[in-house]
Image 1 (cartoon, one colour):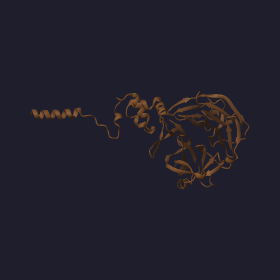
Image 2: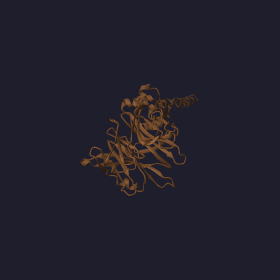
Image 3: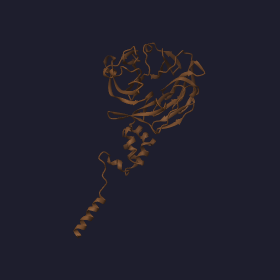
Length: 374
């Protein structure tokens, strides 16, 4: 009896004292906070940001770290920042504009709604967006010019900004040397183009305003920046604005192509030509050599887009993101994305390689894509 009782107590004791097993998929350090806080921050700062949602579920302590400014400051000091692609999508059923992020996990991509961000304000005209560092800036258009806000992509919070000093319509915006240049038509005198500046360091509008009598059309088709100059496009012509000297001009070589919704990667302008009477091609404008080129190596991808009636491109950490539709509007048009790496070869040829291609969402309209560094 004594021996049996001893054995029973021994078995019970061994069960009581046995350490709690850590799931093999979960690193041991994630189950304890016994490490010094500074070391934990250093470790988590090196983890890809796409894993932060899962890390926030481990404990309240980890959740507070991955949502803190401290970890993003550490990521910056360690050189661990990364480019994240944010999309502004409009729900065709609810008409709401919401912010989404394309998460990268190896060869996989996943589009995720940022739930902490509210629906963005909608005005009578098209709002314009610009990304600077870890923030996205949105400025209302026309009578809705009083709407100006910034989205902090580290904490996913929204902050109101001072209203645009002049009400502009058909506005485009881009960043040059820490300043956001917003270009549009003066809502009180539609014959005049106007440029206003927002300083991202002081978070205020600068008093400098530039007006021009240039006869530009409605600049629905976006803007790009090359070599410190801002290029815009209307239905007929290309225009260039030089901040140094506050001068307007046109560019005849760029005028030869309908470069709508283009982007710049390594100081080269790219756009996808999808007009009905044109050959579907990804084109590149070499600013230094003053010529247009066709990007090679993309026949298989372009074959999938031949029925597309629209397309948009975006710069994404040195790569190009090509957005295009599939399906039809009645059944719910799908938005697809192809991530393309680019290589310049001898003789000036530019070759593209599709790193990933897949469906993002159905039943939405793409408003904007923004490359944010966090």
